Amino acid sequence: MGKEGQFQHLNGARSLVAFWIVCAHYMPKGTATGDFLNGAVFRVNVAVCFFVVVSGFVTHWTSEGRPLESVNELLHFYVRRLSRVLVTFWLAMLWAVYLQHKNGQELQVDYVVRCLCLVEQWVHWCPNGPSWFVFALLPSWILYPLTRKLVYLAEEIGGGAGLLFFQAFLFLSSAGPAVYLLLVHGNITMQEHSDMTFWPPSQMSDFVLGMTTAALVRRGGKYLHFLADFSLLVVVLVVFLLPRPATTWALHLNGWEPMLDHGLAPLLAAFILGSCADRERPGWCARLLAHPALVSLGEMSFEVYIFQRPVHDTFELFTATDEMDVFLVYLLVLWAFAGVYKSYVEDPVEQCLRARRSGGSPAEVLKVPTEDFDLLPESSENADIEGVRNRGN
Image 1 (tube, rainbow, N blue to C red):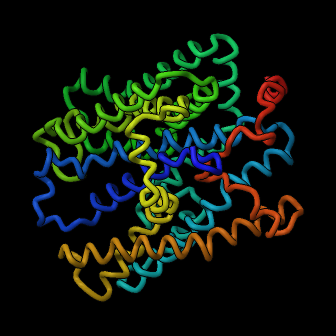
Image 2: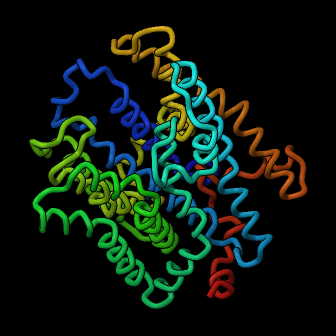
């Protein structure tokens, strides 16, 4: 925990995960990366799974103590939860549309409008490929006021054990289809992998898994840092050492490889649980990930992720991007742009929106931690959890 009550190591982990995803998408393919350590760079379905579980964890940790019953309370929650994400999503999408138009691709206006309204991804890809992540998480964010009641109910019925049983059910619902396909057909196709990853509802179970992890963290625990270190070690060994199926190459996943779409979610949740619940001994992995350099880079991980394609396609207007030196410059520019955008565009816009919603001034809003990627301590704002649960049930 940092001085402001944040779980700093999660920001550090996000910086590495964002770097991993960008490398998988744009690292020059002629550098033998596909053969290095069993093509670990292309196993970004694990990275996406981590982002989804963390998003569920963050959402529940920061919102568990807030009443979400009246229309005004729900509207306030959605503004806080979505304002920062949607503004950035729209700007990145419009940038990608402009670049495709500049390259001679004529896009239908109704198609662009459907992408901006977050409906097109249910059927077709949109110009900014990474935007699918926002499409996928939108149902989970919208339904959070309902799904958190399930988390409350599981804890009310069985306590910590009830939450663990609920986690087991969530894992079966997310990984079960892949297990079925593999057992019955002996293979999982790329199309089936896409359905289990990119179709928006497919990520809801992992999101709620993160929510239940937040509930378990609030219950506390000792010596859980061993669980955190062990879980992360297993994830790293699977990603780097497990050979890929012969039918899988680069980001084209076949065979049993799509099992990793959701298969490591319990281990990722266990890492979050162990490193956040035992705050006096978070574990050596959490200490390493809490390095200030990683933490500062991780604070802009969403911006790096959503702008990776527009920045890359802008590079392609001026130079070939299949050389490693160009890729390294691209990485530096991408992170620099993300940092400038976050500090001078995204944060001020979010503060103004929240100030208008709360009736305060932007200067007063500056004193309140942002909710999207910062993790609040157990303050008076979200301490009366039991009262909210009773209202919700």
